[in-house]
Image (tube, rainbow, N blue to C red):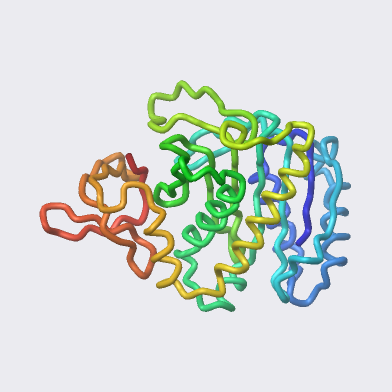
Length: 289
């Protein structure tokens, strides 16, 4: 894994997009390049006009030899702060220093090599983050759940959000985890208030860089372990940790319609399945309340 660290950027998703596009435009096939050649290529990008703003905030770039995953390399873009962080449904992700802001660049062929459908990626990523957060919040009195498709809630408060985009043959997986700060969001569309790791465990802000590194390593370790499992196993684990499973939910679809029903299952292609008036409805995109 290549890890690129910045101070303040517009958003890690934007930086990752530029890196992914550059790799694709210059026809760099990760399977034919060793990790050091890709490292040199990414460093060279920061000397171009395309990166001139971010270059001022560039801290360092490093290799974690623990995570190369065969021929499919993972690139992680991390920032201490974002001034234009983005979340699902075009919402702004409030990105104060003291939290975890990361975008992973992963090639489609990593999933294809495991015979995993692309549409199922959100479930593997959600569980990867769920287990990472669980590693910090160990008190059994706290309830950690996954809100479909991939938000993480602690005691009904949001601690983690995930945004997944697909660009050509590459996934951009944006992950935000509140560590020390929980933004006070006034958006009336936000149903679940924010919380942070510091509310539930004894962590020290002086060790923020170490905590960020540990979260990243846990997420990647979990992900590479989970993709060795078929989706039937993943689905069982996901459902057992799902928010409002077997309960009445309301989903706002992308065309602003609302559907109410009982959350009953996940299809083998990744849709949420709800029961409405004895009919099964498959939902591929929406916001759950």
